[in-house]
Image (cartoon, rainbow, N blue to C red; front, side, top):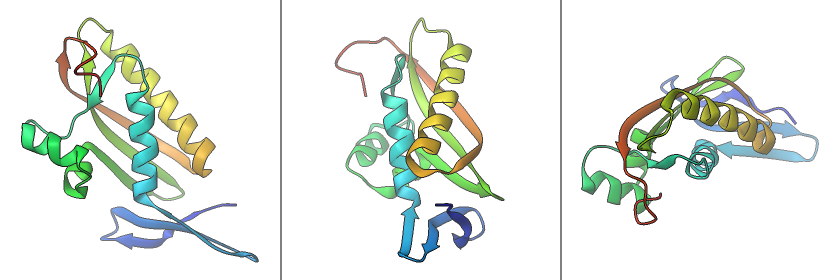
Length: 140
């Protein structure tokens, strides 16, 4: 099944959903699903402490409460022709090799998005917005 990213867009930037029409019916993939996959991959990556939603405690609380505006600040999904581009902001553990960690995160996101959705990824931009000491309390 191949999804058509051009089916439905908001302002030509962010897909509201991706749709596949077959003889069995329609399957619509909302961009929140893609964000969820990306978020899960990121927080399972050793060295990523959490997704960065902004610089304030209120923005971080809003993100974890599921408010979409905060989620948009942390993970951005864009359609680029037949591929999707992803930008994610993360906070990493102090002492980690940041370029290596970012590269591992990019590869993991590309693989899991393809595995779970069948969609091709064009670019994965990783923005490291902070470095923190790792401990069990601040993980994720």
